[in-house]
Image (cartoon, rainbow, N blue to C red):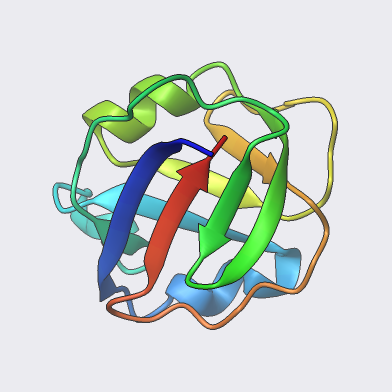
Length: 120
């Protein structure tokens, strides 16, 4: 198993949890526009070590989620802006280009210091 991407949540916007009921949340680098910042979990902008693709696993701390599909802008947006949406609906087709789709499981608590890792 190779680590493709690794990061940590450095700040939680006051409204970041508002999308959890819709089984999704938003990551954004520290340069997030002010009107979006409140809705995001902030991360540092970091490179990936390989391509993010379906079949790999996202870990949120110790909870694992299979990646079911990957929007065609996920890689670029993640490495340039730190900005992607994570949707936990198990979708096998990427309807939105900036969205990473994951298996339909309960999303764990995400707070400052939460580790995010993609392995494949």
